[in-house]
Length: 171
Image (cartoon, rainbow, N blue to C red; front, side, top):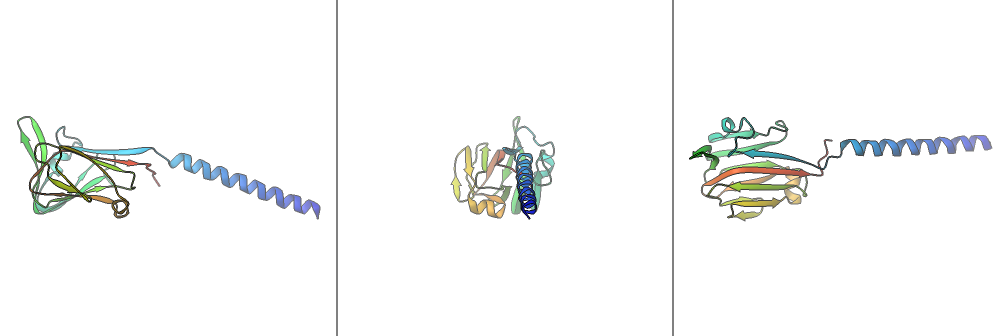
């Protein structure tokens, strides 16, 4: 009888150690500090950015280079246009009034930074922005819906949109 109790205790301890080891190993494998996606019209990054930024009265996507399947801008230009413009040697994305861009986010710790050419009156999430460069801290409600919404107020000229998804996990 005593041998049976010792065997049960030994098996229980063994299972606890194995379970803890597996849990620890999984958390080590899937945890990545952050992942960043950049859409840069000024420098033509990603390489498909000029072709994908050509929407008039339509919807479409601008894919990232790092993860084109999940990191993509969803653009709604059904009431206007989203086009590439060249000014001298500089390219930028031009959005007309009420065009919308959904930037993919995952957590409230994520950040979206926008850099503009010369016209920069837009809304992002719950903020109205009138600055050349602005970093938006993603809210819990943005993260819950999976994106931050950018809406053009008048004409907007973007050089770059960058999203940093912090505490990224591939699972």
